[in-house]
Length: 117
Image (tube, rainbow, N blue to C red; front, side):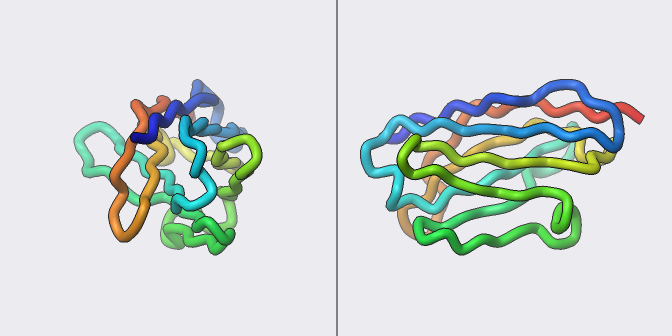
């Protein structure tokens, strides 16, 4: 069982930055692929970015590439999402997830990001 706790959300003006962090409670964090997802009101949850155990990164290129950066620290059992040049359409609840295989089996409770125009 893996517990994930997100932090770092908040209210920011358009053009601003936020850094989200997800802390994982597992001794084998290094073996999990980690992902960030977001869900805006009235919309389905959407993939944002992921990073494998070896550091291979994938972004949702349509919406965040060039503005968001995912990283992980296996020594601290954390994965982060640095968000810059934020837009009002980035407003959503952001979730951290862990995959041991092909599907994301573990999810955090999420952290709210609100971008004002």
